[in-house]
Image (cartoon, rainbow over all chains, first blue to last red; front, side, top):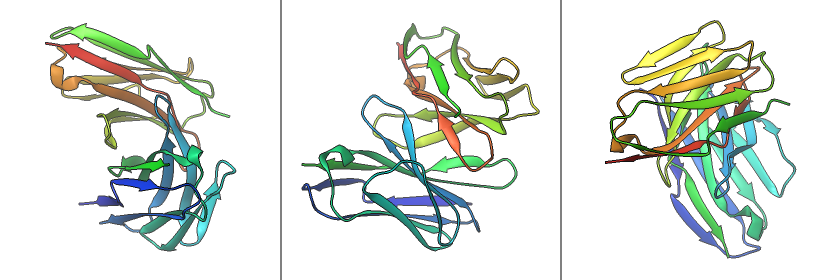
Length: 112
Length: 111
């Protein structure tokens, strides 16, 4: 069966520090991968999605970046965090004809 | 650009009541529609997926319907239980690679 791992679960970082969130998927090949941000009381905002290794599409301009170094690994990064980067970050994957989307447990990021 | 709206934003019902959550979308050319449940501080759990060619899907006490032409979907929950308390989100995809989410309905089922 397929599983998705996302870590860390919580993270407190000072403004200006770097960020690296990792997401890995097991049990499937060539999945579509996604990074979302969910701000308090708001919906999910798609940040990045990837249809293959090294292929990244960005939905919103920001100081975040994403990389897909391996088929089932998706990394969200920042060189210098801003206060506005605080939020709940969710990784997800989808595959197959039905394209059902499955989510990780999320990372709560607080930038202080 | 696809826009997804969910009404109401919050709903509180007594245990045992049947309820309906609504989802509307602006572009009817969707590939599929998916309903999710999110518990506080947790990720999203997929509940039901309706392909564009389907009218409804059922899973246990949940029934989701889709009316593509009017840009609407409903999630029907029968005989609600306190454990159903959560935020319910709907999402549509046009191309299969991008998902557009509503802001969710926060449901509280009162024992």
